[in-house]
Image 1: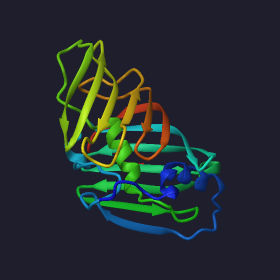
Image 2: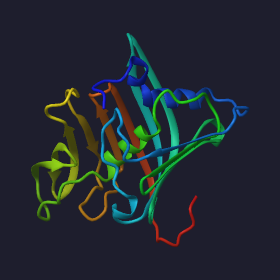
Image 3: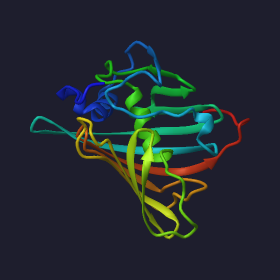
Amino acid sequence: MTGARPALALAAAPALAVALAVAGCGSSTRTTVLSATAPADYPCVLRDPRTLGADFLVRQNLAIHARRGDQPVDGQFDAVLQKQGDTLLIIGFGPMNVKAFTLSQRGDRIEFTQFVGPELPFSPRDMLVDVHRVFFKRLPPPAAGYSGTVRGELDGETVAETWQDGQLRATAFTRPGSQLHGAVRVELGPGCAPARCEPSSATLRNEWFGYTLAIANDEFEELSTQATRP
């Protein structure tokens, strides 16, 4: 595992959004299959989706900001995120609601299919890492109605959670002793309770790799394992 990625990869998530914004329909379909447990520059244990709690679907708008040298890099795109049974699925949409990519995790298998746009300059696994940090990476919940900070260790990382009136409002992930300085910080809007985490919004600030991801969540839907996938 390396301590830092090349400058191009520091703007990895914005590069995806920009690619979707300029993508043409003539691009060829590309499929990549990865292992969720293989060593990666962006460290994170990706747990089997079947262990991640209740099934849900949510529609999202994502705005991404980073810097490449002295220049800001910004992008925006829509997506559908679904956790159902043994599968975590993201569908990304480009202009005119064209399906730009699908990204799924089933057990140890990650599969990414890109329908439009240039080849990604980063691993599609990175997108799943941010999803896990926003929705699923949790310490054991505190007592009902708790307000304050809970600290602990989770999957090789030090985690600090800020709770307010029984809802999780912020999480910070650090890796002491590694070459990754600072933290990955997640701020959550209302709606992330111990039993179901359905925040109205989320902002992920990745100090390790220099980007910010702002997520607006809309229309959370509870799913059964027999529900039809989008």
